[in-house]
Image (cartoon, rainbow, N blue to C red; front, side):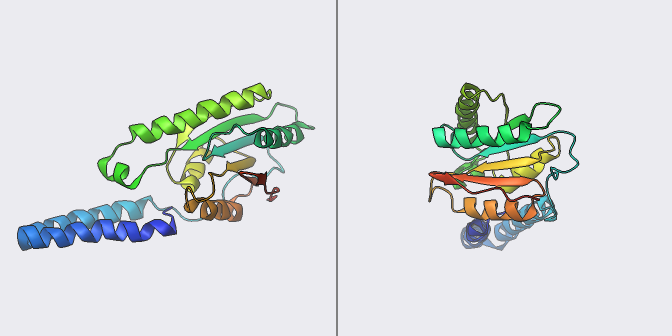
Length: 210
């Protein structure tokens, strides 16, 4: 899913090379670049998926699985305490311990995407995971860790295919760091059948039971 604020950038990225190609290389070059842009549009369109419901409702689930999506390192005591309480509540009455998975989307910059420079983005995502998993371990919470797609909603949707989360927590970035965070959180809140929390710096919103 493409964030709305990115659409003007995508349009500009497609249109500008075509115009420049016509101006500098003539009709032949311009048409060739236009054809490549058309192929790119088709590829992006194919990647888009229906906006159906996501996740597993708590009721009827064989066990509780907690998916924590981190857009910033999970290290503040308040956030760790909030997650520990969620895990403790999920553990009550459960025959097996709660599974916890931490997911960090690889955030690509505009130039990185065009240059196909994934290494820096994946490295930063892995650093967030190391800090987050270590902080959870100190609180007595064992967790696995994975790097996901750059788009938050897409990353969650991809992960739910192999990790049927009954609870999803989105740890938002600092205010103003990514304008797409709130939109992604709103979409997850609408689509998730699981219980959903959003943790922002300075506080958390309560669960939206599905």
